[in-house]
Image (cartoon, rainbow, N blue to C red; front, side, top):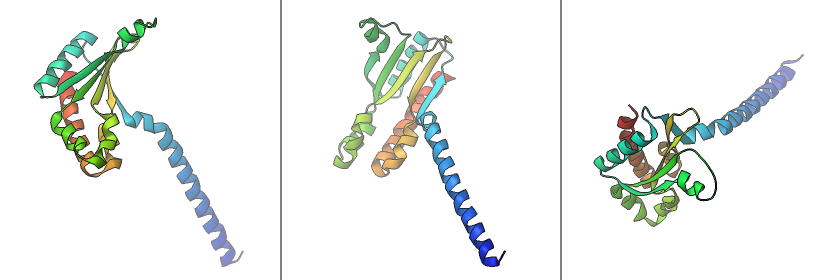
Length: 164
């Protein structure tokens, strides 16, 4: 074989390896995205205690509970029996105002207010679920990223004491 033929084979092999690497990276990324986008922690407390502690921590932090969706009660009224699930919508006016006053930033208003879910699973443990706002903020950049990062950090501080 000539050097020219060897270079063609090596070049073709390199391109093939690169393409396979890109495809595998894409597949791995696609299947790992859900676990990156959402966060879940087990609470050391029962459901009612977790809720009580959370509400107090929110108040202590100066945030507001906009509303609570009691999914168990809502679904029960429609004939469905599910374990306890409450979804809290939280707002910190210092953060939401910074986003909502800017026309270009209002695009993220469907993700507002911040939502945190508390639910029991069949293992009897209470869990806290939420969107990974730190990760979700990055693609937006600018003010949206800055504000969402700060709000996410504050939310995690609220939860950190609760989850000890």
